[in-house]
Image (cartoon, rainbow, N blue to C red; front, side):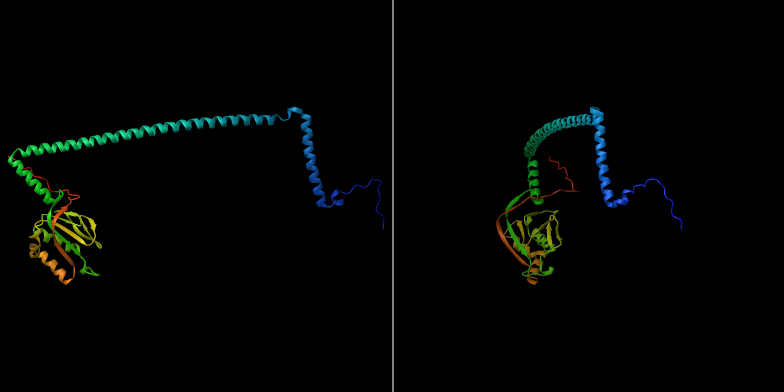
Length: 290
């Protein structure tokens, strides 16, 4: 076996990763290199002298300009907001003042209209009263206004109170809209001149209807017991009521079903005017007053 030849060249040092652990090498070199880089930057900055931080001063100047501009914008916006608030407050006060003035003007004109209407009615009445035919026409109109329910009326008459049978649990034992219709028709036939059911005036246009469990008069629900007030002769209405067909039917209901019914004479009844009395199809006829 021949020996490996040798040379006089010196031996190369072994790499650090061979002589040191890999983890120790990474840690030491990374930290050393960081320190070296920082030191190099500081040395370079020292060599440049005072001219090095020009960029920093430039950034500071721009920042000051931006801050100044922003402050100016804030002040301008504040002034505009204050001015707008003042303008809105002034406009609101002017609007309120105008509304108050218009409301006062409307009230004055409304009062003027009422005054003129009253004067017109007085002139019409005085003109009509100058002739006998006019006086007769005035009397007839007053009578018709009472009969049609256009005015509040007062006088003697009867009060009729009706209610369901005691312990009623079926519709047969309850007062229905048809029963109130029969009662009203019987009172008209017995001589009633004006009538109201639970305080609601009954006219030629009154509707008495069933709406579920409730009864409505003039499209307004009423509650039991049902009170019917009729102005007329309190001495003759009860007897004539019994003689009417609908009156006899009511007494049959009272006996057979147990509906409660009482009629008492009254010396002083006051009935309200109809709440909503509008003719939709009928028109007035001009009457010759000669």
